[in-house]
Amino acid sequence: MSSAHWLSFRWSPELQAIACDGERFAHPVATQTSPSHDVAHLLAAASGLPWKPVGTRDEICLAEFSAVFLEHLLGAALNVVLFGETRDVSRVLEHARWFTDEHYAPFPISFDEAFRCLRAAAEPAVLVRLSPVFFRLRAFELSRTEFRTQTVCAAFSSLLALPATGLLGDAVSELRETLELLEIGMNVERTSR
Image 1 (tube, helix red, strand yellow):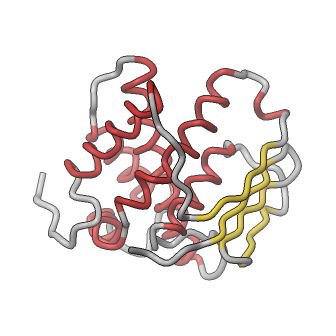
Image 2 (cartoon, rainbow, N blue to C red):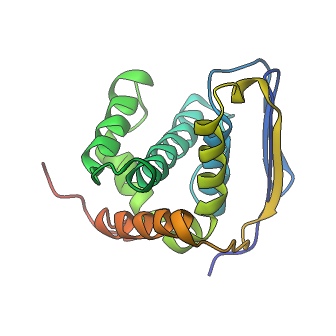
């Protein structure tokens, strides 16, 4: 079991701030990211992945890779439940590959190495347990076109265990199955495509 972490975020149109165990990062200007992206950074922190987008360019790249991968993975699980989409992990992987190969190029390591490191280091039980925080916030974003004008904040422990029933429980189950399919949390080599 991982150690407990104290996590918090505040997202407003003017400022985005995330913190893990008092180690804080605040974006100095408004961004086009959504509040759920900041929560993905916190889930990365709770799961033992690079999370803080500050430091060397390599450190920033790896923290953003963790957050972007988790944001799209959890978003895809929620979309299966909310919109009846078919599970398609290839879209999540394609986006992560685009992120390393194009968006943040030159990335400090290959996509395959970044994904291997994420798979080996992530703690699936933590991601599953905390996923309702992401799912609730993402559902809020989807239900309000004006969410970017709102201020959203929360503070919670990485040991938080929210009840997950109904659609939320279905999204948690979908995430659990997807993590198993991708072998997240296992130190295994990725097979070639």
